[in-house]
Amino acid sequence: MLYEKLQDKKVNCCLCARKCLINDGGTGFCLVRKNEGGTLFSLNYARAISAAIDPVEKKPLFHFNPGASVMSIATIGCNFRCQFCDNWMISQEKKMSGKHFPPEEVIKAARDNGCEGISYTYTEPTIFFEYAYDTAKLAHQVGFFNTFVTNGYMTPEAVKTISPYLDAATVDFKGGADPEFYKTFSAVPSVAPIFEALKEMRRRNNIHIEITNLIVPKSGDSIERIKELAVWIRDGIGKDTPFHLLRFHPDYELTTIPATPVETLEKAYVAAKDAGLNYVYVGNMPGHPAENTYCPECNEILIKRYNFMITRWNLTKDMRCPVCGHEIPIKGKLHASGQSYPYALF
Ligand code: SF4
Image (cartoon, rainbow, N blue to C red; front, side, top):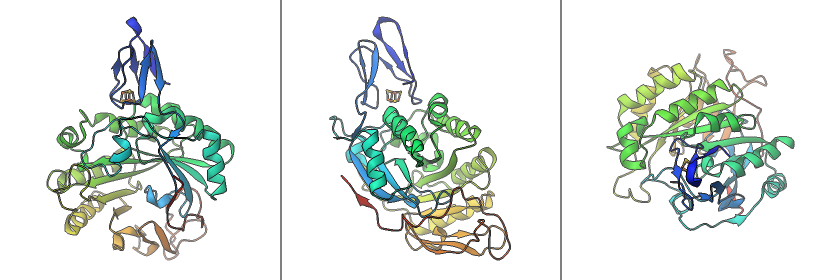
């Protein structure tokens, strides 16, 4: 899907913002899309490298069908080269691998495991677009929702194409969206396409958006940048957009950098709130008070969480604060199915 045929059997892939020009016999930067005789093939279609049942809060999605259980799927490959990737064993794998797991079987497994939706996650869903698209279409037919966990480096055309079937997206920033950070640590030449993709998602009113930002000590922990990002989210997407500030853990090639200090996360939290965002969270810090949802009007605790689990629900049936009546933007309804610890199918 989404490529142009050019002269001399070359193709131009238009799925992600790299827009790879691929010669006959070559593959794109993600290594999972191959030009064979002028036709671009998806090598990872229906080849899942991982499948698991997760609470929707693990994505993280805190304002979308809270407590729901989702079937998470991924293939190998990525269009980024993040030195800190915590799924690098599958995202950076070069040898094609994965279990045959066609869309119909994904739906059946989701149903058998009591899920309410499907999440395309762990690796970048843009690079397994056709697999995600076909699964998402089937998922809607049987009443499941679909969520992407994405680095956002998609073309607007890709967003448009998936939008009829995409109900929610978690868009992950790193290093406060600092262009130098992206170049150095993720091999990404520009951050502008991520903002364009977000604007396109916003234009499609049906897609619920939550945004994360990974705070990497020293190189990607500028509070000023986090504030700028929060201001952009407030003005570009809306002040009710949930914004998750994620703690970095040493992984893959960045093992010499320590985990993000709690004080940095808390400063970032204050900066994002000061920028005018109503729902700011701290992630990868189980037990921190900023995992909870507070009423932006009266500060009542509305949803208490521990890690991915909801431990107390304090909203009225019509999603209002029980103290002051303020309406809390939560899409969907409360579910009980996701309140078990995540488990892998393979
Ligand atoms: S999806 Fe892959 S082949 Fe297509 S533009 Fe992105 S990196 Fe290149």
